[in-house]
Image (cartoon, rainbow over all chains, first blue to last red; front, side, top):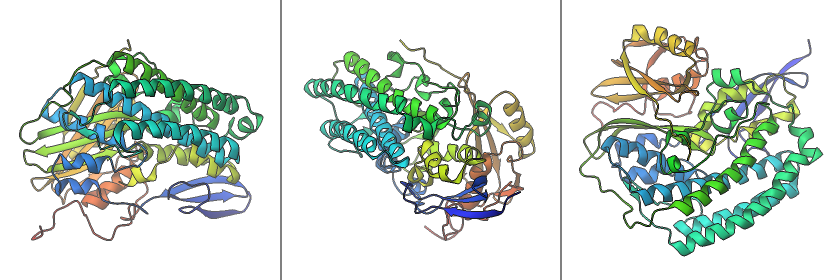
Length: 360
Length: 124
């Protein structure tokens, strides 16, 4: 048996985009155990539900995270809409889908860039983020905000996307698709990428299930799960299947997210082709919510669970978000076991951690 | 068009003493722990343990309503990933959970205030 020692990793580390601390118990260069701790940026956003009315909470919900902010706002609104029992106008459902898929694209491109940066492929990192800028420009053009849109409201959306802007989205998607094909080929065919990702950080299907993993992290281990199949927003009208892999390694996680960029492009084209030409964007709600509801949404990082408990007053009794990274932490710790210390930084990135989401 | 799944969503109100049995039963039925959380209402604490089935998309929530002083058994022995959820319940709501596999001693979120999600007596 080699010499055992504990190496602190994070919360400040060149590879880490957000603060998480992991105590790595290592034997020589091999990780034996990983003990995570969070709590560096807890903001108590859930607790604000007692002090802000349910409409104001929409804007707080989308500030849970700066990357998947739209989907947080949407998930919260869908949960409150369930309590009210209101049906969102059809065009609003499509608009939510369009913004959600743009968000997924930019999140995955951000992650692909961080992954490339993590294994030292700077050119690839630049290319991913350069393409991501085009998606951010679309978000700014359609909502006014690059990351925080503030377009959701309980009952629908506050802004429309006119046809000329939908046409611009389609034109830009053509460009982005071509550029993403080059990025995809580099990730899938380059020896450097494969040597750093293939066979590294394996999580089996059974482990992913038992540890409650979510999203691309779970799908990369062969779990066929995608909350968009539950049929919220306009997803019931769109044709898609969850993208899965059975390898369970870091390369499989890269494969899933790369292919989901193309899936999002396809879903955007379908949504723009089918968006109904209606004027109603909001179904007005009367009074205050009374009751409780759970809502599950497929964010870029996976299943997010929103729980709303209302008492008939403007303020909620409880607003709870279980974010995907919170669910993926146990899987991360398991995956780190028996890996080399040099791989830890990259492996942490492969779950696409969002600590801001996790701590709320 | 995509196949849309309309799964059963079940809210099962149970006694504290049934928690481990029910959780084990769901685990055997191929459910994973999707989330667990606490809520404070009417001077009681509601604990919700939600389980999801990735094949059928079924979503079952076990609901336990307790007095703040009631002790609750940890499910981490059966479902290890519950460790963060239970530490969160303990730190934010002061839920007395027995035998958490890794008790972080109210340092999950590193906040100074004790049980911030429970209204303070005589406070606003």
